[in-house]
Image (tube, rainbow, N blue to C red):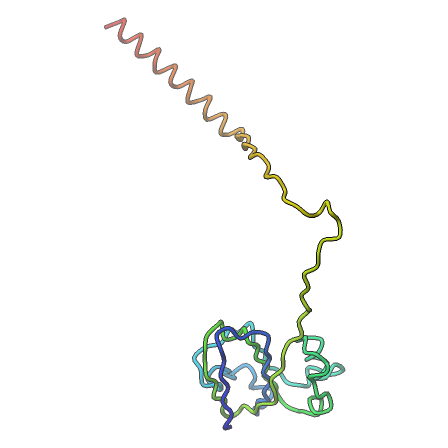
Length: 173
């Protein structure tokens, strides 16, 4: 495989999809990081599974519903025609590292897709009462627990007993 992928440390929201030319029963032994030519990946951000696991949904449905890829980015006919084992690699798997991926056998790159994100808008608050500064509340002291109060009472009682004992010893001496 001659593709090389540059991964920036601030990359996020990309999903790289590969076919893995291995039998489905060897999925557990597949070393994704080694196949990409890197040292490590966050295992919680990668998936390797046989496409037969997606019966009824298909790979295109999984990409849309499971990974949040926009429908217009997906060639459903092409993805659903794939067979074998698939490797899904999210940007978060690189843990913010800047890397060069050099995928090699048994990997075959299918595509890179962007996760769909909700648009962000900053609108004025609708009610005038919702605007403005809120006066900080006066800090309220925390009430001591019963155990703390019992400890203080015991300490005072011990000091009084000590003082009385010292007084008796002084008078007796």
